[in-house]
Image (tube, helix red, strand yellow):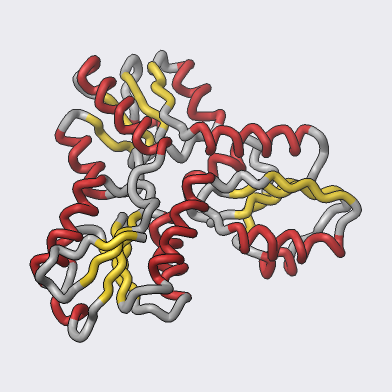
Length: 288
């Protein structure tokens, strides 16, 4: 945690040591940029990342978002987003001679493979994640639709649990959530396999955000409102009791938030570009 205080101001600004683009997101954006330059116009199967401003910038460069592979013209070029896709998307692309550029985050691909392996070995596969999140849905598709998404320990109360269970995690989950699910499952099963597939970058960002939130009067979390990892950062910061605001851009910062505030912390999700973070810091410095 380090101060970004501009000097004369009475407002001290602390930026989390881990914030902003992760490896998978940076890799995907570089891949999209190179592909759009090479092909002129390409399709993204869903938003490449959960950041509206970045997706709009990509659209201006020729990256068109579509709902699924059926919306892509035959013979075109399509990108698999960072959250991954199910086997059906790859099969449909091959049938229609669509060139696939796979930007699935390597950490997400690891979860897909683990879930598929456990399913093939006869385990009841549980995916710790969010039911409506594209990453979690794609993981289920890699098990032939047999895995079940659970959001936490409470969800297993209504499930018929088999003797052999395997758990994989959406990469943006909290370790505490996995520990609670494990504790709830242990008394009910004879064999339990756990794949801690929570991304290391996610864990580091959550720890860094928590450290800052505990030492400031106000937290600002920057990132897409549809971003699971950014939303989780906001939840973690708010849980400390520190007033927390989740925003997408610097224009959303309100002067009244800073009334009688001396120390403000800033963190950002893994799909938040550096310039968005810098803009928020500058806005806070001007206010201070």
